[in-house]
Length: 121
Image (cartoon, rainbow, N blue to C red):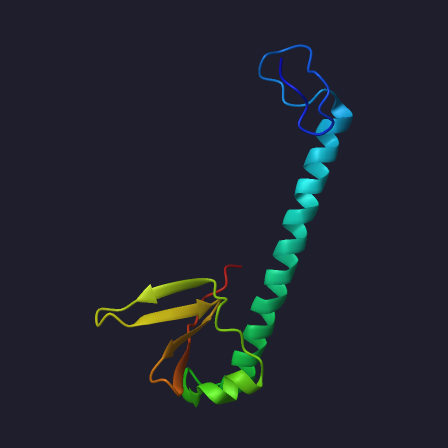
């Protein structure tokens, strides 16, 4: 016999049942959503902070700028988090954060670019 994932009581009924009751099923899924939401909230906070830093460094009108890695480090830019990446024909990888991208040019310098996305109305 199978036992419930939550309370370990014996399950009666269908052979593919996982929980013994609606109460245990709701408890499981509520906690799963909470853990997922907490993790996503933390990551979203880091991504938005990083984007704000890139926007501050770039200004409103520039589309490309070379800055020192130290300048981004001082503003607490987190290089581990990005939304996607792109490798160009020369094998250089750009890491993107929504509409901003960056590539480590040298050990001390980073190139930041802005991609102009057209918003759908």
